Image (cartoon, rainbow, N blue to C red; front, side):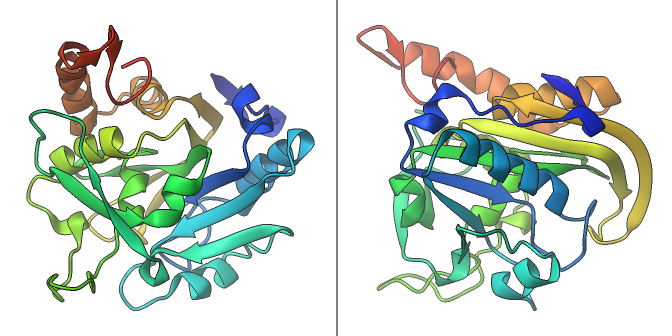
Length: 257
């Protein structure tokens, strides 16, 4: 759905009322306010909507860019909502999660914070960012859930920064199926057009909020803005894979894929 930004009121799906833990993934890698990061105003609206229907634990989870900690970024962006826990991906225990695709594009598994597996409803909230590679919306926002470093027994101590992966579009498509987020929100109050530095660019007023399943909402926002995103084509292609990998007639992976 598309909302006028000044009329946006978050109406949680029924699943939120039954959830014990709701995870909200903001875009908060840098200590720079909206539109570089997810706006505090939009997060406040999301938190208020959840609280109207549920007393579930609400968790923010993010990995800051090199040189920062998530705690520093949360503080700089004033993400100080009452009864909301703020977690740092880099300080979390991790588990390896298998990609359900029979033929992954790039990654057969991802190591992610184990807290994600204990949450009942997952929401990605991202600003509308246009980069030289195309749109970066709610699905690319999930990259911040992957730890930069691996410190487990027998694992490499080298930086594991997937933002620099040569097939980043494939990584994002694989991540979409491996971590099936329930809802995506694109904060398009402004469109932020940037180069290789995601903290520097120009702003254009749009005045809109897009809400829906992450693939659908990213596709709708791209169509509306007349921009492209390679990961969306890969996700669409992979849905055919999942339809052929079925159990009792139901597709494996994302619901409704």
